[in-house]
Amino acid sequence: MQSATEVARRLSDQAEAVCRYYLPNGRRQGRYWLIGDVTDTPGRSLYVRLTGQRAGKWTDAATGEHGDLIDLIALNRRLDFRGALDEARSFLRLPIAPPLPARREPPTPTGSPEAARRLFAASLAIKGSLAEAYLRQRGIVLKTDHCALRFHPRCYYRGPSGRETWPALIAAVTDLDGNITGAHRTWLDPSGCGKAPVDQPRRAMARLAGNAVRFGIACDVLTAAEGIETTLALKTIMPSMPMIAALSAAHLAALILPPSLRRLYVARDNDEAGRLALARLRGRAAVSGIDVRALEPQAEDFNADLLTLGADRLRKCIAGQLAEDDVRRFLPSQDGPA
Image (spheres, rainbow, N blue to C red):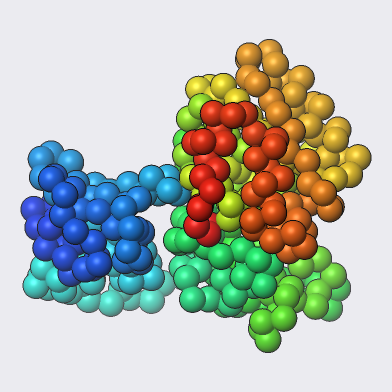
């Protein structure tokens, strides 16, 4: 049975055939296959290298996602890693791996980074899920499958009456190197009507301090916010802006910032905790020479602004708070959805 490395190598040898099969709405331009995203949306932001030593490597410039052709197949077909390997072997007409014998996973400490990693690995792609429908109710339309977000149909919730299961939006908390250190869960009502009717429909677990839920790869400019929905509301109007969700005002103030950063926008909530987080983060960033600028909502947060103002009016409000060069770079007048 061919290893994952061997399967990836064989796929890269047939990179153009893979693209024509899984991304038929794209087209070849020079050494690259161009398409809108991994789900085959027409466009040009995702490019796959077709030749040379890096054949098969792809990057989505709009989201910062990247990987090899096994990763692309996994996202395109909404499969876990084993399923994507079997799909790739089928494409290459190689033998399919036999089912693994059932085995009991060793227990992991509750609330540990390893438990967070297992929860995220056990979750499904968000595309077409109840979690995507929930975000749409919040005015957030995802342009592509953000790799930090997944959906779990039966996520455990421990409440006063014991352990229950509810569907949940799962977000990976990562460090600057992309390692999963924690997870955030938003439990959802199975009817599609908002959050689950539990005491605490949002909870985070494991190692959060300094880390964040990341949307795109930050280099010189970054926007940081407290909540996931606040972050995604801004991602709706600025899809190419790298953003992170710290998950609380306290964690926003304690963020570990990329060493290459030169400008940081802090999309604080409109309350005292948000103002204090901004002040603390500004003081820390000043030591590193980072230009920190506040993004201030009109309502309690930017998701509320998106729902009340709409995307066009929110875009105009944000344009007045960005540096002029960042308006041209991240806020074109006809930006699509997140």
